[in-house]
Image 1 (cartoon, helix red, strand yellow):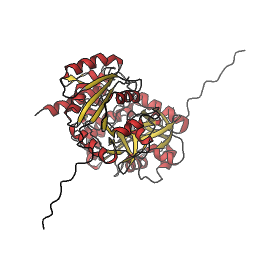
Image 2 (tube, chains in turn cyan, blue; image 1 turned 180 degrees about the horizontal axis):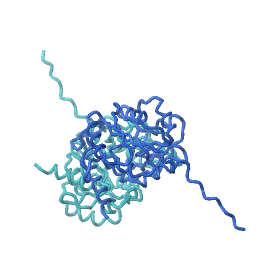
Image 3 (spheres, one colour; image 1 turned 90 degrees about the vertical axis):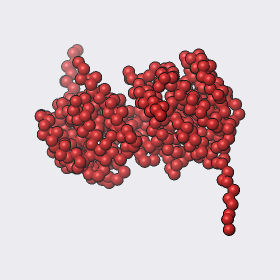
Image 4 (cartoon, chains in turn red, blue; image 1 turned 90 degrees about the horizontal axis):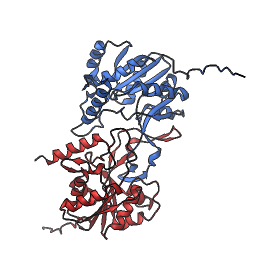
Length: 245
Length: 245
């Protein structure tokens, strides 16, 4: 007897075209130190033939499920961003808006600007090497739990410190260094952002505060956050290698 | 009335010339991934005109308080290490010995080989950019508590994960990424290494297990651990810049 199986339904939400994207690039980069740190407008630094942020935007433009992109910039970069988007010739709309003092304030502005959608991806503008595979994986992982984030194992020994003394050495094998894109069901992220935004360093932590489970999957070693001049050289090498047929 | 103050005594231990050094470079580098990872014998990779490990040894040779250095290597590098040391022309004795399967096993071997001394510095062979200033600072900090380690603030968001879900987002401002050299009173480190060596990623954690306080001070952004080919390029730039008059 031949059993004719119905085709498996697509993972919930994965084929939903209404994915909204918030790209945050309004940071004052206060954590950078040393002479190798890049200046404020680093996301417009030239990288493999175009501004860094254009690579980041392009990755989301190419991803089929994306409906709309909100690009959140600092005051200094606002005009530059609008000009870039006007010339971009992209298929999907990109709205440029002014961010807030902290990253979380900027994401909140982005949420207010974003049209209604089913899924929201939040991504660092300074991660221009994000791939289609990572976006696909992120959306698939989020489809099972409503919230998913890429992360890498941690190589350093990390300790908790108080008043210049060690409080605790953290078990390294349980630690992950978080990347973006972080992907959430729209209503979940919007609810999370109604809470207290103090001492927040990523979007998932707000969702965790709601008691919602956040899935962690293996990110990409190439999905670096460009912070120093060395990172810029590294990102250039990654992007040029990919462009080589 | 003129009060004649006695000169302050030197910080306890700082002027004690009997500092023993353990340089560990016996690792199998299992944590490296990707095509950019360096091969097993990375500590002998050419760097600014000489093998990486020669830079590391030289830094401790130049530090006045050092009496003896034990260099712990893997089987594959043992002969190469002995040959390097034989040619080195260094003032202070360097003993080359075979390490164990894990980093902590290698440090334990180093402790057995080291002559009696007052202070012990443990350093990663793959951190060739360590400076005299960092060694001096480490010994000064250790002199107040018996145990001191350099560390840097953490830029990534770090989460604790279990079964691919977030357990906890750690408060970033309390986290530090630990470097070497880690400096200890000799008897304290020897006592610490009599304990259980499982799941140990740095020497200080064993001292912490004894209940002893470990001082944390600001390390150096240039004191990188060379793990990838990009790190090698970065280390070369750092060392060449310093060599330029």
